Image (cartoon, rainbow, N blue to C red; front, side, top):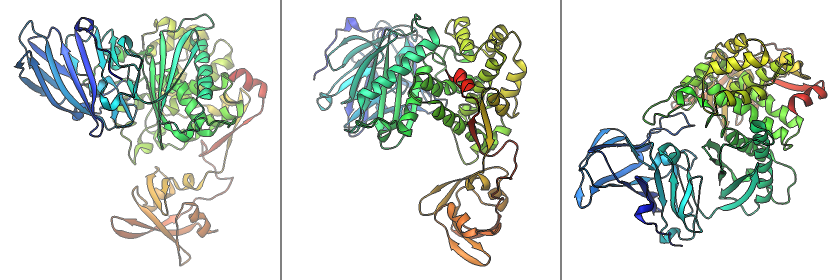
Length: 595
């Protein structure tokens, strides 16, 4: 299907034309027209994408950058790794052309092959310095190879054909790059929530995919989230919303945007026709949908004051990711419960999993969750063998801070975290906020300062008072016998052998000298040698012995490392426990909390 052509008069002062130029080479072709360039016009490509706190160096995929004014070739000087300067003449439009290689099949950058195209503007659209706040237009062009494709994006359409190819408009550069574009032969469905039109597109689904169920369940999530923020008569801060889901063999993730979200999941996690029961994978996917949709309010609009205006050229630091990511992680599954998509037991299992993840991370005793937020650029998004020992996830611990705060507020009976979130939205006018705003709202609604709790839970490495707060709401936290991996202090991969991925601080494996990267081949027990292929083989061959020798391969050498197995008894004590479970002691109290 040919692209509907538009007149030059429909273009904004900054106009991009993007074409899937070579599907097999994975090359997008980009033409950028600047109607009134500066004499020394600077241009740059972002080094990161908001919501994913890592410098990703998108400029590495840009090639063959050229510039002209009419028939004149414009000299370009590269000033930095991602920044150029064009020597322009006044009164003539500047036209730049370049290609971008799109090979990252994730939600963060750009992808192109014979089946599908996807891009974020931060990967393809050079920023025209000095004109960021003016209107931008984006033309998505078709080719003979993509004539059967369709387009989906959260950008406002200006002149498009029935398939979605054509010209879209953005009020400014921030909006342009905050609306990713999906291209291909995707499945598409629509629903209305809170009076707002929603669209869901899915690429790569198997024939068993139950799109009707996905739409119905997502609609419940959206209605529940809208009611949370605005009540029955509140008005959403967007005119329409788009979910873009890429179903692949095995992956998981999402990235929030101003009126859309890009998601990726394993196609086996999609709901299947004829299956009434939700699989664990589908429940996880619903939690992801809930998480990214909640971000439409909490981080895209109500955002850290330090990120009031993005600096696309370098890291943007904030200590508040424990609030914006962590509290969103607290509410994602809670809203599934309120929407009736999971029951109390399932919700408590999900909380149990989160608590155990934090308890089994020694880094929680090394770095506060506020520090972890600030260091996201070099720690959370650059994980290695030492990450669990040096930091804590602001997602998981942040969600537990939200849990503790909600339970504490409900126990005192003056307010709830729900009311605090809505008050913050009103106080900050759906815009930038600081930690001081949270502290002040807590003081106003709870009728006392919560500074001691915030200081202890966020700005220290003290353990969270989970047991006491859960008990006050009818849930008993119980210590459980840890699995062998927890007893040893290991995280491993098993594939006909035991590959050591992480050695946790202070554990038996570390004391024995086992290191990340080792291949654990076997055991020597009472003079006998045994080959192991999975971690459970250690307990099987050790029997009642507590002292044995681990045989590992490291750098081409075989090493024998004396290992003392920790006791496998219910009486083994640790404070807090290594592994916990939750049990309901008062279902009425639980219902009042979760309802």
